[in-house]
Length: 86
Image (cartoon, rainbow, N blue to C red; front, side, top):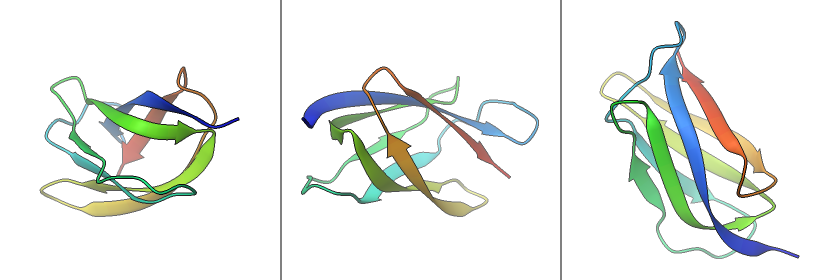
């Protein structure tokens, strides 16, 4: 049964270095949701709240250099999303 949760993720570059100030936005998902967005901190961590799990979501990652959309399956609130931006 789907339930609301907060999800943690980490954004890194292709060398494994954390990326800060990356805007993370949910753009599509299986359930209705309010605007959900976050900005990664100096450790590359971001948190998305009010996400219904489980579910597949389209998430946009926007930095000063690029913008990437990813389709992500979120299975549980204990899952950590590891995102590598090239």
